Amino acid sequence: MKRILAILLMSMMILTACGTTGVASNANQEGAKAEPVENTGSPVAEEKVTIEFWHALGGSLGDGLNEIISDFNASQSKYEIKPVVIGSYDEIDEKLQAAYAADQVPALVAGGSYNLFLSKGLVTPFEDYMPDGYDKGDIVGGFLKAATVEGKMVVAPAYGTSQVMYLNKAVLNEAGKTADDLKSWQSLAGINQAIIGIGTGKGKIEYVWEPMWGADNIADMARSNGAKYISDDGKTVLINSDEWVDVLEQVRKWIHDDKIMRIHSGGQGWEYWYKTMDDWVYGTSLGYTGSPGDYAIALEAVNKAIGEGYKNEFAVLPQPGWGSHEPAPYFSSLMYFIPNDSNLTDAQKKGAAEFVAYATSTENTAKFSIATGYVAVRKSVLELDSYKDYLKANPDADAALKQIDQYAVPTFIDPTGGSILNALVEAVDKVEIENMSAKEVLDEAASKAQRDLDKFNGK
Image (cartoon, rainbow, N blue to C red; front, side):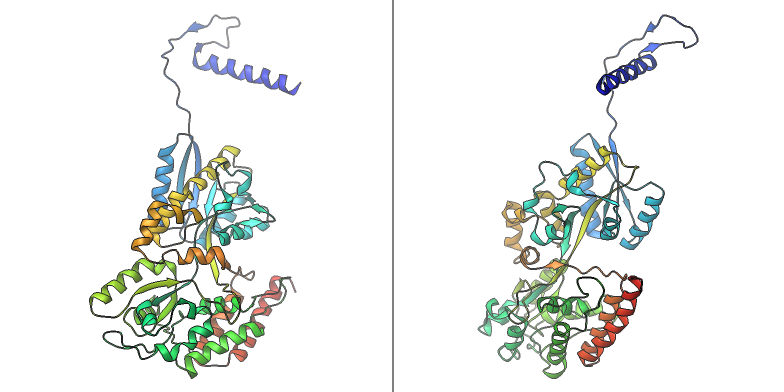
């Protein structure tokens, strides 16, 4: 019966449409004859489904994304991606909350606190609209884990990053060492006598390693040691546990007592970052821990230094583990997600998912990775001819991808909005810069963060 009614309604709609487009009619003249109009035979172009897409990518990332959007729009006639650039991820969160309240959400978002919206039922699971050709099994392991909740892929990774090790392979080889001697942070520190003092053309190695200033590298080490930010039930801050204290206290000793490691801090903008990089490029340290986004700049700098007479051979490795533990560095990933709201149609959601599949295809994620230095989301890029050619000219550019696929864990999401992370940052500064006791500063940081976590939990 419902099917019959639907057919009748459809017939009425078709007749009505004919009466307004191909037939001249007069509603005030009952039974009036229709006058035929000329049929030109020209097909009416189907209107594209508009997919409003919010993101906050600028610079080379934004350029790469814009190229993918243009290519997608030109590749098919069903959907039109309309990008809207938002100033920051925090601003995306603010605007999106307002958009939900007004039932005016975009069809697709990249970035923002998708976990927050997901917990409120405001995200449409990506897997519900995932195109047939989308291969989940090809997604880099860490990314897939971060995108999956209770066995379902709820969001889709766009790209990611995880801190890796940049090192001077020429110095490592001269010391009679190999990558096998860098399997743990302790073994890396243990080669200091073989490394420190080696000439590098215009100077000599003074430090075996330089972690990047801040809490991120410490967190990577601590996570390998089994450290957690908070308890599994979300009620207790754990940044003063033995797992954290042991790591931070050992780093303090390497920096201040043994003087085999070094931290550059302060300065304007990214000054500390470039000073750290320069020590490795120009032969003051064996290496440093930094972002895969450094890759292009770092490789160019090393090649330039070699031309100036410095001894260096560019190499990148995944991070080591802590002690006998496997590596477990954190990684962050930008996620695409489809909002769940009554103003979005199924066609828009399907279109959003189609674009995500296109943007993260093997070819496009490889192209984006090559252009930006950030990690591709598909393992199959390693079998792509263009990516193989890229690796021939760019040694170890796949180190971060392999690290995220095999070892890395999703970055911690601070439920307090930053209080726990900020408390840890302050504690790490006191140890790395002021040479204070790790136990003392972490106890203080945990107490401060606990108060804010208790407020969040309504205590």
